Length: 272
Image (tube, rainbow, N blue to C red; front, side):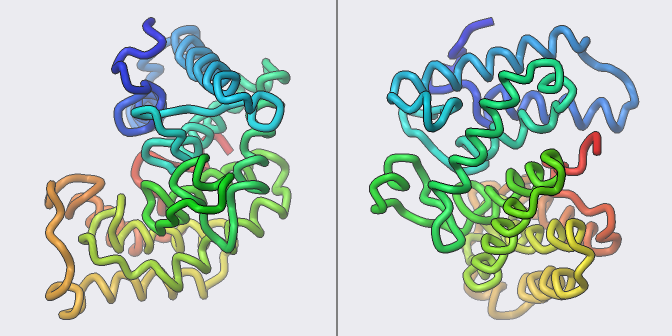
């Protein structure tokens, strides 16, 4: 297996190993079949861990941030192309890490670094350089901002004994989305309104607080408003899962049964 089969970073969620593993989890659950032997899955996880350690060492962050990744040479922090998405995927395989406690320690330390160092004022910068310098760009989108990294901390909350520090961070990120999440880049889940709405379906499942469900419904209302129809941009792929209407349909459908709602491919409640 090539360490960098794309030549520009092969670990992220959209075109890398992390997305491959998320797809595998979905197939295993819905088809109720192994799909790929655990031994082969372990090899992919090990490659992800090796890549993260190597890049962390390359940027002299091993002690503070044991796992770090790059895509097109950028140390992204978000869900689509960066650290948050990869860490969420790794936490979706708890049985592997229970058998490898040293790796579990590195995983948790990396999540805690992302939370303690990179989350500021309820959001994260798009990349590590911007976060450490305090000069980074902050977006609310799932792909590069609060709407995405929240899933990593939600998963950590569930995996690490419901440690309240992770839930507290989720609340902070969700407040940012509530205040700034009426996006106009289209209806999708990647950088659109449905991605913002999904945050509150997640928070509803985590807390059972009806206020969170109310907020999710408000984002759905905005999607259907004349103002949104008039002012929103048309995505490059208007019918796709992440940019377009396919993701919007998932969000609206999940509103009908919020107790089982999950962001497409990113089920933080897996195996718990």
